[in-house]
Length: 231
Length: 198
Image (cartoon, rainbow over all chains, first blue to last red; front, side):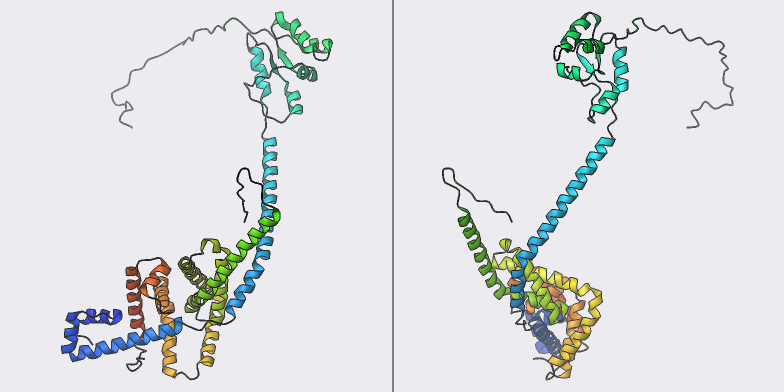
């Protein structure tokens, strides 16, 4: 056992193998400490040699040839592995695309009914605003159309869809029918396609003033709460 | 890996054979460089794994796995020190993973004891026993301390070399080594004999 003063420092010195001058002096003068220090050093030396034996074990001669064989087999294995990864990625992408497309198809409600009603209620319809009817739009394309989207009529478009609703002022209806017929010479169909725009109510709606038949005002009594204290 | 060839404006594109030849030359240069590293560092991988697993067969498997991984990443690990540091880390990690697979653990321990008894008949019973206690005590050390202890005992590595292998300061290596030795001494004091100094 070390002297109590040098116990910690000499144990540490035995572990690290470094002695300070003061410790050397003490060891030279103290026999029990010298003996304990020697036994500690012996323990650490045994540990050290055991560690070296454990850490420097003989490497098997088969290791390097095994690694070489594994490396030679490597490219083919990796290639096939990469092929599988690529194939699975392609299949996943295709599936994802299909699902997204189907979802888009389902969530495409075309709000034309409201739009048509709104347009017909307007007092002065704009020239050339072509809005296909609901059934025509649904049959024609799954594309979602904006409420505010304006489609310029081309002769071919107009001729192709006779169910389209076109809002044209009265004085320009004949000219518009001609314009529609310009493409294929189907004047009769075109003029039938141009409908009268229903007249919008021009005068304001009169609202009668609100009348309260009987209103009784009752003052609060002294004991009742005003509502302030409650909150 | 996809390769790109830089063609200067005005010059013609290299022929397919030339491209193949260049690629082949590059591959063989890489392979011969790796062979050098393999001869130089395979023992390091094996010994790190052996220090953790205490079993030659498992350590060989782990060393092979680590070296094949090193080959896959060899373009980034061409520098010797970098390669060895990487190899130590990967071997140690793989060996720990293998050790943790609890199913094989019991079998391995039994095999190891049998193997030790077979291969060391000449050794004195006391030193053999002490070695077993030492290896068990090492296995109980924290990973960081264990690796420093193993590397410093391996191939006569200096503190600087251990620090470079683990990419940590020399001071840290010193302190870890100190604590590791101290812990081992605490555990092995009762098993050591005063005359065992070699």
